[in-house]
Image 1 (tube, rainbow, N blue to C red):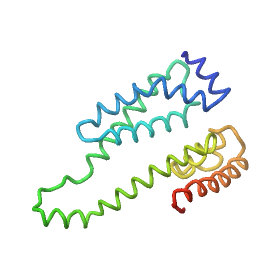
Image 2: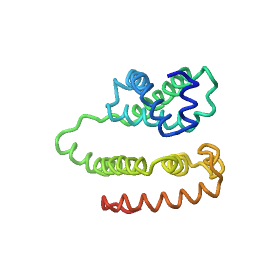
Image 3: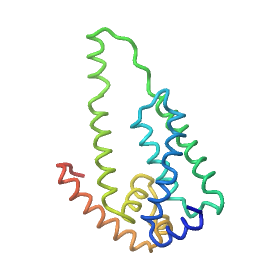
Image 4: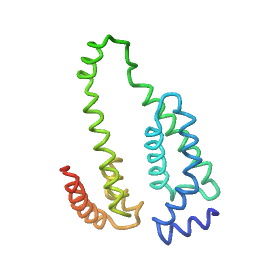
Length: 185
């Protein structure tokens, strides 16, 4: 798909346009990420990084100069993959311990809490995606990227009051979706 075709598809339907962009570049982006983190990360780490990359691309798509889409995607992917690698290597390495010491270290480090937080984060992201566009983008920009209503309004092409109203309604729907999983905000 050419850049002009993609831009016109996005102008007509952001959901279809971004889905097409994702399908076109997913393998390329995943390969870049995996090449950077395969020595230390897992496939789940790579998937999370790829999600962050596409979120960034979607949020800043209007800023991409015509004819520069692939280089922009490559640059964002490399930078985010490097950030992911740094984040993964920043974790302290596990020291060799005897069986009793290992059990105590596990209890002290809060491994279960980390796992629970990660599982909750994945459930939350899945439920946010179910909100549909532009609500997913609005919630992500507000709570993950700490953007103000005027910044969000520019990206989703609606006025600030509509952003606040959609955010309010999206949060109510998100609470309902989470209550189905016995999770409360």
